[in-house]
Image (cartoon, rainbow over all chains, first blue to last red; front, side, top):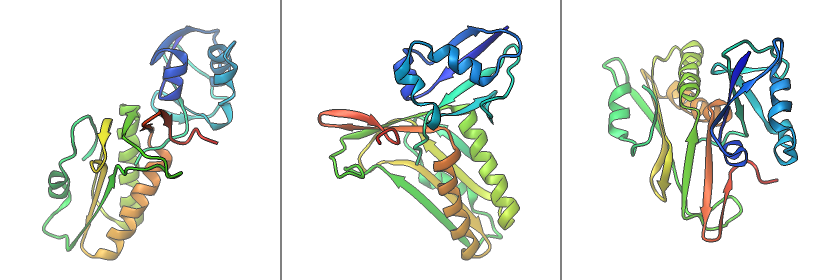
Length: 81
Length: 137
């Protein structure tokens, strides 16, 4: 199945784009997508503890299961205002 | 009115959006770009980025919580993205209610919760570099 990962702010800069379509196995979780996207990128993987995630526009747990077509956002520490 | 915009914020329009005949108070918060960071470093300007669909939904959720807690329905939140200069507003929030006490409380709740839950990021630009706020440790 295919999901879309969306990258904002520091993730967009470090991963070189605002989004990526990623082929994953059925049953993949947010955690699995994170590991796939950050593989070979220790500078990005190191931000795991300060990152929140959203699936289809709503906050999601790290172990939430994904479905075909989902949009998964990587959200670094927010600083609006 | 829960909006992410690339345009300068029209504070009068935000005020007019919340004010109704049964309101006796309007409390507004303007978040304004200042010329230095928390560490005292000189800031030239800021750039804001958002996850717009989710940001607007999260702002609507803040409005719903204000209605639940205080019974206030007249709330507007507008956040600007893109480059914002010193002295310009990055965010304007307005709350109107029959009396001032709950409007003050709800407006403070709105900006505090926006900072914590609405997916918006700001980058400070200095004379000699730039940094995403919140990533420094």
